[in-house]
Image (cartoon, rainbow, N blue to C red; front, top):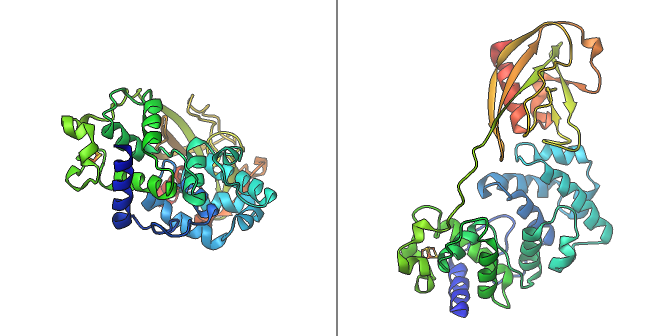
Length: 343
Ligand code: SF4
């Protein structure tokens, strides 16, 4: 069964591979490891449609890992703005510098794991896709396909061990990169979360979920925990058509990004409500934003005083040029609220 599944999938991939700027067509030379690595980092928690323009901009501006390694961190963080999960951008900087230092990407999964920010998944994907090494590559799409193919009943995330073992069993000794991408594509286009298109699937013959009519019930997911809502405040301080921006601490949420000052809200607790200046403030509305583990209701407070001389640790930025400040999506939303005529 295992050989039949990999053979059928590779043949299907030859006809149905999706086209992306970071990919090489099936059965051609593997792509540059820099492009594979960068795309895999960008695609974590992000759709291909959202990541693709970022990938194009990054690789046009920094065509090699050495060019990226030599770029100022602020420029990379600003280019990442809007892509979310900013710890990834900091890892991109650290990893690019480590790779440039050692003279290129290593070619094995174990060595790739030693690079900053490369987890098991990314190391396996780069080893398979860029270096043709046999590696077991399991992302959320592959997880779903394999749970159905083998009718794995155990709920996720506990089922991950069994899913990995089953993926290992069907991973062929050669064309590891094409196989990994075939599985991803099957999960994204045919074996979809809802209404899988089994009539178009190349592995129907071996699919146990289909045989049992249970494809809609798999994979089983553990019930989700309730997502807390946190409250916080962002502060808009404007003077002479310029707004006061700060750079967030390197560690923590949206670390290292330029932002409006706020009151220290986090995933664990609400903000203190403490303003960066004493005196007159007025409410300017609320922005709601969803993070992975919590929802945030961020109130906007607009400064109505003139004690600007007391500000420290930030910079004045022209309001008309806020688009070039590289604000993360949350603060870009707050800035839009502040400039939408509330003042
Ligand atoms: Fe998924 Fe259906 Fe194919 Fe099974 S037959 S792998 S459920 S698309």
